Image (cartoon, rainbow, N blue to C red; front, side):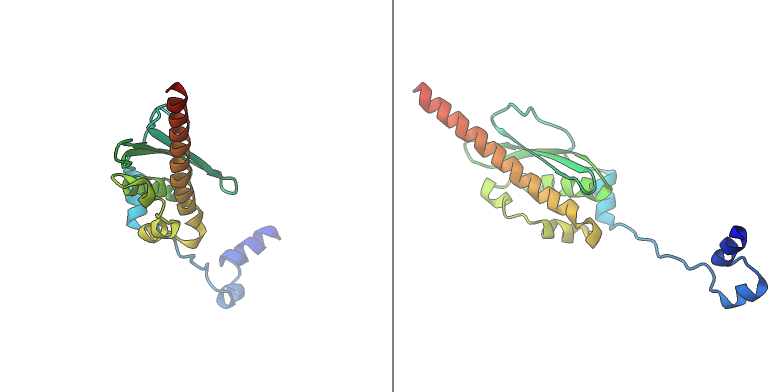
Length: 166
């Protein structure tokens, strides 16, 4: 009986079933945009800086719902306040890796205040992420903000330490 039901569902059933039942419906395949594939296959700025370096800010964020974890680090020129370098390590899907890669490219060479204006919607639009993958671009935005916050916290501590020594 199960065999007949399976055959009927798949369109391999009896002649009268075959004529009335539609053939196996093709489910359209979803393809990632070429930019997602490019950043996934050739991620930019993968790596890590020394988290104890006072010029480095580290943002570590995750999405418990899907299991993606993103670590984004920025290296800041203390005199100019410009981000001189950025890197990331991401455990997650292709969209999360691509979002991290794009985020590191976009923050390099910008002022700290300027990178805080980068929104997840801009990253998602650039990568043409489908709605089900928007959380990946949200993680990238959160990672940028967390890295800036970490750098500022370190900088505040180092300024306090210098003031105490003086």
